[in-house]
Length: 178
Image (tube, rainbow, N blue to C red; front, side):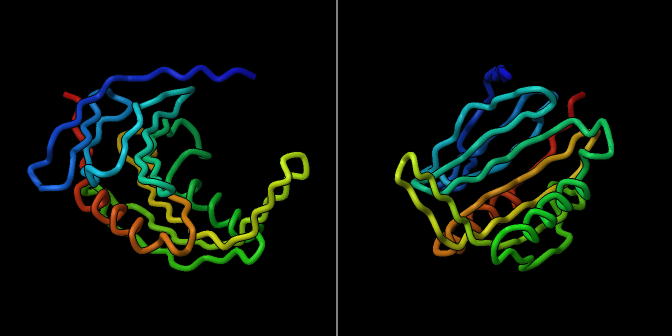
């Protein structure tokens, strides 16, 4: 199976707040804006199938922001959150830490924190991972699309990465496509 990824050029400008940049998506599938630390790197917006996404990262920290067409019952905020809840229950030491309703760009969004133990054993590469992970997922429905902000992180990274996510949430806006 081959997935074709196409990059879309978007704008990024200074937000007027020292130390932060503002991302502004200018296409229908990603008409959002948010601010993030200027020390973080931003990928190009990519699209495949019905999904559009961008990643911002700093060292080993990352946050993925995506939108997907909500054309059936499997793609909506409640269904996306339920997939993460179900996954947490299946992972070793998986648990739901917190679940709440928040405001994302003047829309109701679900905010979920889960933790689990990542165990990865690759005999071919002689690579073994066994560490606790924390994941935060924010999901909102808006004008026929489901928007997700997601980050997986080591437990030691939680505080600093969550500060960035909180700032993204605080500055997040849905842009009208008139």
